[in-house]
Image 1 (cartoon, rainbow, N blue to C red):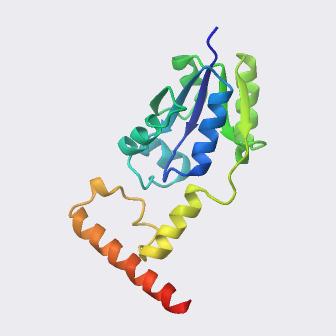
Image 2 (image 1 turned 120 degrees about the vertical axis):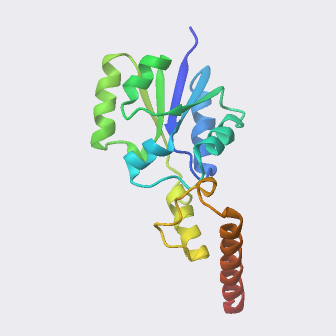
Amino acid sequence: MTRIGFAPGVYDLFHIGHLNILREARRHCDRLVVGVTSDELAFGLKGKVPVVPIAERLDIVRSVRFVDDAIVETEFDKLKTWKRIGFHVIFKGDDWRGTPKWLEYERRFGQVGVEVVYFPYTKHTSSTLLRSSLQRLSGIPAAQLPEPLHKEGGHEQHMGDQQRAIHREEEVLTSQE
């Protein structure tokens, strides 16, 4: 029997923590399917739109050699995804362990024979930390940062403004050293 693993996540601002989870997940299954959370679902779950649009996040995740397939995750309920994919094990970062939501998933998945496996959360790097750094460096208010660039009018001008803001911040930091 082929053991299918499922690793759901937003995978925004892809970083070493994401790579570590995918690497470890692949070691625990024969086939790894990754559920990349849609922009709409991410907003519904976290109250903010990812910085990197879904098409780009999906392409990045599909390019990782540990990943056999990646799908757009649109379901709030992971058991609905399980019914569609039929995975045997689901992977999450251990920052979710013990939360009411994942305790309930452990119970529900246990009833259908799906194992829940947690991997160590990478504390020194996270999408939240990267997002905060982008906000500080760019000077862009938090409410404006999440809007994917492909949805904005005049994104070339916007990118130029961001690059100039980052350059000014780098000059300030360099002069303080």
